Length: 106
View: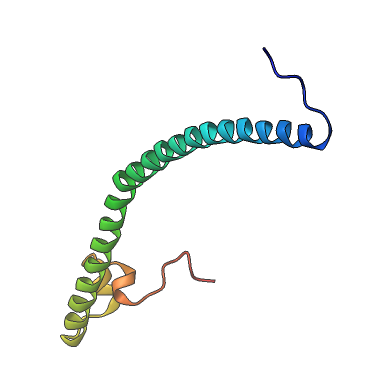
C-alpha cells in the first residue's frame, strides 16, 4: 500500500532530501564522465607536445652550442689577425661575429 503524500514541513524536507540525493547521483555520474574526458584530452595534449616540442627544444639547444663553438673559433681567428669581412667570407654567421642581424638594425 503506497504511503500517502506527506504534507507540511516534514513532507517538504522529505521531498527535498530525495531530490538532493538523486541530483547528487546525477552530478557524480556526469563528473566522472567529465573527468575521463579531461584525462583523455590531457593525455593527447601531453603526448603530442612531447613528440612535437622535444625535437624543437633539442634543436634549439644544439644551435646554441654551435653558435658558442663558432664564437670560440672566431675569437681564435681574430687573434690570428682575420677581419670581420674575411670571417664572413669563411661562412661564419653574424651572431658568431658579434654583429647584430639585419632584422634588429634600426
